[in-house]
Length: 375
Image 1 (spheres, rainbow, N blue to C red):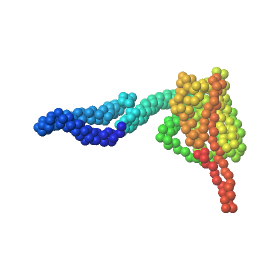
Image 2: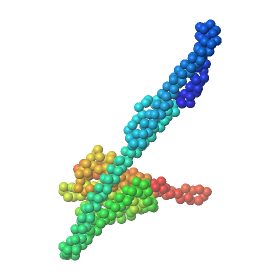
Image 3: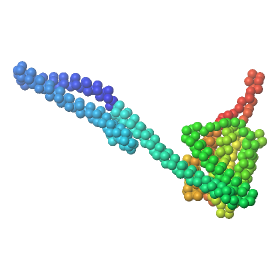
Image 4: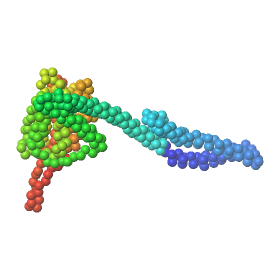
C-alpha cells in the first residue's frame, strides 16, 4: 500500500472511529445509567480516553509495521553498503509496499550495480597485476640478451665482421621487441580509455600488404620460418583503414603465430592470403603450429585470456595482443574469428569493407559519392 493512502486511512480512522465508538458508548451508557448526568459524563470521559488509547496503539503499530520497520531495514542495509558489503539483501518481501517497495527495489538495483562494479574492479586489478608481471617478464628476456651481446662486443668476443654484424642485428631485434611491448602497453591504456588514435585513409590493398609482407618476411627469414603470400584481389582494390593500426593487427597475429609454432621437426610455415569477397576483403593468416583447443577458440580474443598451452609456455606474452587486434578490426567496421585444429595449426581470418565509388546523375551532372561505411 502506498504511504499516502496509508496516511489518509490513518487520518480518517483518527476522526471517524472515535466518533463511532463514542456514539456507541453513549447509547450503551445512557441505557444503563438511567439518565444520571454525573455518571454519564464520567463514563463518557473514561470511554473516550480508552477509545483514543486503543485507536492510537492500533494505528501506531500499523504505521510502524508498514513504514518505520522497513525504513529501519533500509538503514541497516545502507550501513552494509557503507561498510563495503554488497552481498546483504533485504530480508522482507517487497512484493507490495508502495513507496517503500520502490525504495527496496531501488536499493536492490543499486546494490547489484555496486557489487558488479566492485567485482569488475577486483578483476581489473588482478588483470593489471598480471599484465605488469607479464610485461616485466617479457622485458627481462630482451634486456638480458642486449646486455649479453653488448658485453660480447665490448670484450671482443665478436672478433669477425660477420659475428659483429650478427650481434648488432640481434641487439637491434631485441630492442624492437622491447619497443613492441611498450607500444602494446600504451595501446592497452588507450583501449581502456577508448582513445585509440586513428588516421583513416584510402589504401590500395595490393601495395599495402605487399609492403607489409616484405617487412615481415625479413624478420621471419632470420628465424628460419617460411612465409607464403598470395593476393587474390584485383590491382585496384582499396579499403579505408588506418595504415599504422592495420599493420599492428598483422604484426600481432604473425607474432602470436611465431610465438607458438614450436614444431618438433623445426619447419615453421606462415601463409598470408588476401581474398576478394565482392564488397569486402578477407585476410587469412595461417600457421602450422600446435593449434588451439576447440574449447579455447571462443575466448582467445578476450583480454588476458590464455590457453593452457600458452599459459605453460616459456614464451610469456602480455595476454592482450589478440584483444587489441579485435578492437582495431571492429573499430574499422570489420570482424575477426579463428579456426584451428590441435597439432595442425591455426588460421586467423578478418574481414574489412572495400572502398567503393559509384556515380549518380542529379540535374544533368555526374555526382561521385564515396562509401565510408567501413569507418
